[in-house]
Length: 246
Image 1 (tube, rainbow, N blue to C red):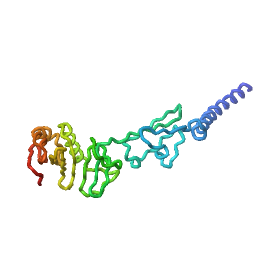
Image 2: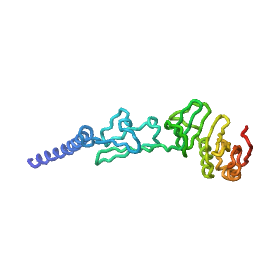
Image 3: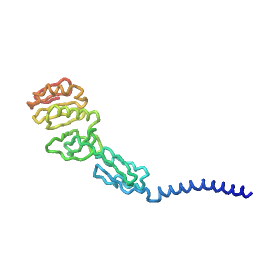
């Protein structure tokens, strides 16, 4: 009987241990995660841009390294193309890598005034000053549209065609004095060279895929002389005249 009683007590002890031990581990884990400083965040570092962690959190708190970092609202940082978040669990540190947008063009509005930086997709992300010289490409927009930071200068296909034409001119050694878009309904723009020649391009087509490089080579002499209008709106045909007209 004594052996049976001892065996029964030992069995109950083992059962109690199997029940209580996991509960103790669970409670200890909950305490460590939610109430202790074992996983508390020591620092949040932002790299690649002059942005503070408080600006990214926007009033929210992030105190535990094990939790998911709060989503970053890209609309609050139009100058940033992308954010990448990583964690150093040993140092209990969060690192936010900011990738600034590439400054591709300056877009200036007339007659209202105001200029903006444009990225390779045509996205307007920052105010800019109109440069008085240098190698920065500037587009003067007289269409009367109310553009601003957070929008796009042109529809995606039109912007692609615009930048393709400007790249072709650069590759051909044509130096640009001015780029103008006067009426978006016509879906075209005019480039004035430093020598005074004017070249008219369509925003409907990509000149690189329409023989634009060949056309530029064929009109190189005329463009070099200046005071001439080269109509490249209907490639591969090219029309040259003394003045530009519709």
